[in-house]
Image 1 (tube, helix red, strand yellow):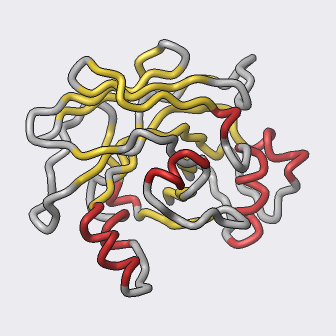
Image 2: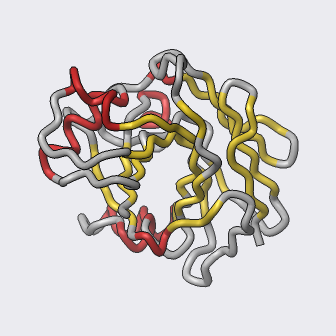
Length: 202
């Protein structure tokens, strides 16, 4: 099982971090040791003083596939959820400034919080609203219509480079509103009003 993440998939988020808009999806991978199950507390690592939350729509791959055409990508996932991509922003900024990979800032232990999966059923993945609530206040309010690359396009692109296997999860990018956490913060992620992911920061 691997966790594949898409960066810079919402224009407003690109702008808030003063990043360059990419010409194709930005891909990075988290190992299975990054997984944190829904409801378990998130313990801040000692190597960072600026951990940020990033709420994202997550899809779970349900059968193996390689070089999947976008027209058939919907056949490769039946469940969706929300995930929180925890990012060591201070470390990431240092790595980016040196032109180095992001893994230490993005793929550390328990940096991928994954919520409860639900059937995609009759949901239109191109018209979904999702929110992150921190201590009772909405801090991120995203809509999948604003994705630069839609879910099926992401699967088609990623599968050109990596064999997708059953159980793999794809984080599809975060909207604007990312920000820091501190000990005691309670994070809750809602998809169309349904609570799917939550954690308490330690």
